[in-house]
Length: 158
Image (cartoon, rainbow, N blue to C red; front, side, top):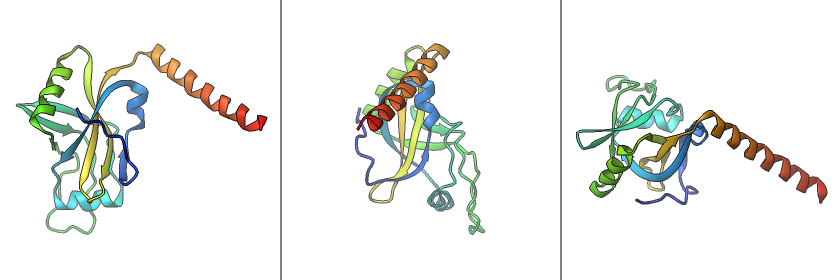
C-alpha cells in the first residue's frame, strides 16, 4: 500500500484528531472521493466534518459513510444530501489488501484527513486501525504529557 508522506502542498479540509487517540493506525492509504459540484464548493468553505464517519467495503467497493458536508448556500438547483454515502476510489490491488486487513479481527477503516492535493482534487487519507482500550488511551496521554513537559524543561534550561 502507498503511504502518504508529504502533506505540505495540500490544503487541509478536515482532520480527524480523535482517530489517532482511539485507534492504533497500522497502515494509511490515500484514495479519491466521488463528489457532486455543490459538495466541492462546500468543502472549499471548510465546513466539513469526518469525526463520526467511517469507511466500509460493500460489494467490492469502498464507501465513506456518515461524513457531514453541509449544503452550499449559493447552490440553488443542484444541492446534495448532507450525510449521504460517498464512493471512494482506490486501485483493485489496494482494495484487496484493505479487504484482507479488514477481515482480521478488530480492524476498522478510519478516515484520518480530507484535503485537496496540489492539483485541487479532493483526497481522503484512510487508516487501517485497531481500537485502543482505556489503558492504552491513558498511556498515550502520559506520553504526550511527558513530551510537553520535557520540551518545557529543555526550553527553560537554555
